[in-house]
Image (cartoon, rainbow, N blue to C red; front, side):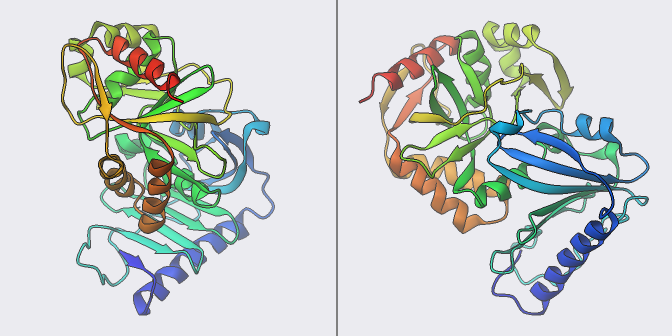
Length: 355
C-alpha cells in the first residue's frame, strides 16, 4: 500500500493518477457526457474503447440502483477506459510503483492531503482512480468479458466509497431492511446469514435496502441508510435449504455469476431511512429467533474489518465513521430461527418497539 507520508514511491503514484486524469479530461473536453443516477450520486459518464458503448455501460453497472436526479446528494465525473483502444490503453500488468509495505498485496494509494486514491487488481486488469480536487474518477479495465464476478455484483463500490468520504457518510458491509421508513442493519461474517435474511425480507413484506453494501448517512441526528444496489446474492445452499429463498428467486429476474444474483424492482424512493438498531450475526442458528443485548465493541469488530477490507482505501477514516455509527444506534446479538422470514419480521418488530 502506498499512503501518506510519501517519498519517491508516493510521488510516482500521485503523478501517475494525475496524468491519467488529465489525459482523460483533455480527451473528453468536447464530448457530452452520458448522465446516470445511481443511489445518491449523479454520474457524468465518459467512455472510450472499441468494445464499450452506452449499452455496455448499462450492462456493466446493471446492479446499481437507478434513482431520480432530485434524489442525488452528490456528483462525480466518471471515465471508463476499456482495452488497448481506450484512451488510457491497457492497464499495467504489474504494480508499477516501489512497494514500501509488508502487506504488498494491498495494491492501493490513499493520499487524502493530495486528494488522490487508487486501487488495482492486476490479475483481472481492473483499476480505479480518484482525483478528489476535480471530482473525477476512472474505471479502467482491459476486457469487458473478463470483469470478475464481484465487480459485476457490486459495481462502482470504490466510487461510492469515495463519494461517501466527501459527504459525511460511509459504505458499510451490512444488510439493511426497512418498514414504513424505519431501517435496521444486519452485520456478520460470510456465511452468517445476511444474504438469506435479505431474501427472506422480501417475503416478510419489507423493503430491501442492501444485502451486502449499504450507504449510511452520518450527518443527521440519527444515522440513516440509503440504497446503492438493487440486487441480492443467493448461495446454492440457502436456495436449497429455505423455501422462502427459492420463492424469492423464482419471483424475480436472476442470473448466475458464481452465486445467483437476483435483481430487485426499482427502488422508487432513494431517501435516507433512519436506522433503529443494528443486529449482529455470529454464524449461530437455532429453532426460534433469539435477540439479546450486544457489546458495542463486538458490533464494531463484526462491521469494521470486513468493510475496510472491501473498501481498501481510507481505512482509518472508514473505521472512525463505523465507530460513530455503532456508538449512535442500539446493538443486539441475534441467533436466527429456522424460518428466515419469521426472523426478519421479528427483528423489524423488535426494533420498532425500542424507545
